[in-house]
Length: 84
Ligand SMILES: Nc1ncnc2c1ncn2[C@@H]1O[C@H](COP(=O)(O)OP(=O)(O)O)[C@@H](O)[C@H]1O
Ligand SMILES: [Mg+2]
Image (cartoon, rainbow, N blue to C red):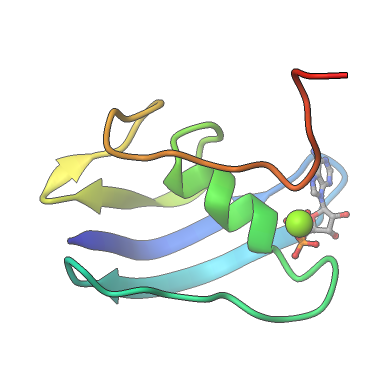
């Protein structure tokens, strides 16, 4: 189970990309996050994947704190990064 608790992420310059997100995703559930460009989707995915740190709040997987890249989390980036 993925649990996101009171998650906020601000960037230098004052953009509050995420503001107090609470979300629980049970094992086996598929979740889609939909909204317009700039609403914070990529920021949320990076923090959940352990590739970025929250300003406040926390992310846990099966109760374990996500504080870096996690063996149970893969991420497919929006643009190819490694191959020409
Ligand atoms: N590295 C960054 N530094 C400063 N601002 C950022 C950075 N990454 C994203 N932002 C800002 O945070 C907000 C959310 O961006 P993002 O998570 O990329 O949204 P989405 O993926 O929904 O388009 C936007 O206002 C964006 O400009
Ligand atoms: Mg994005």
